[in-house]
Amino acid sequence: DGGITQSPKYLFRKEGQNVTLSCEQNLNHDAMYWYRQDPGQGLRLIYYSQIVNDFQKGDIAEGYSVSREKKESFPLTVTSAQKNPTAFYLCATQPRSAYNEQFFGPGTRLTVL
Amino acid sequence: QKEVEQNSGPLSVPEGAIASLNCTYSDRVSQSFFWYRQYSGKSPELIMSIYSNGDKEDGRFTAQLNKASQYVSLLIRDSQPSDSATYLCAVRSYNTDKLIFGTGTRLQVFP
Image 1 (cartoon, one colour):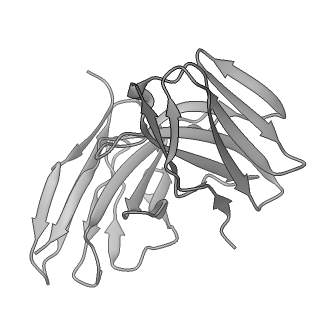
Image 2 (cartoon, each protein chain N blue to C red; image 1 turned 180 degrees about the vertical axis):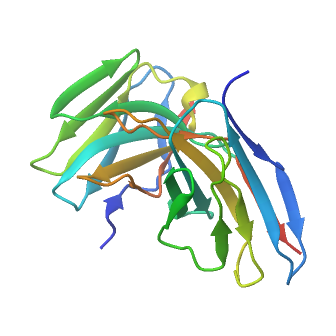
């Protein structure tokens, strides 16, 4: 069963807590991305990684951290420094090709209580 | 100025009609253009990509690109109620691995 998996599907966090969102893929895609989606807004890029052990900040990286220790995995940690973390978080992957198409996982909905 | 602009809608069309969704972008060196469909509560699904001027057809979907006017459109022929969703336009500039997304157009197809 190939594809992109994200877990958990729903996550509730108390203020002041760090939480980690999982993203795993078995598509052998090189690049992985984390986006955040808020109601009425487009997707905003948090972090991305084009190769293992390397990643770059996106447009809204403050309050988030990532790691890329394996090609298959790109976890996102939402830290207590992120002041408004309630959102829909989407992980995407992109193969090394001329077309640069991105494919999304099912998403994690994070709510701060 | 937003980099990728879409009318938020909703765009309402009757079943069987052609739905026309439009997107404009500000970066003249943009090279790759994508349309994603997103059902409520779900993640985006890639439905079309286009890289050169003109039309690209795939089933009931046609993507149109005009780089001189900096717009890309998506036509959905024979619209079905199951096409009701938000359609996101995404653009990639030259020599970058980042996509810039519009805020999406909500399409409603009524029977």
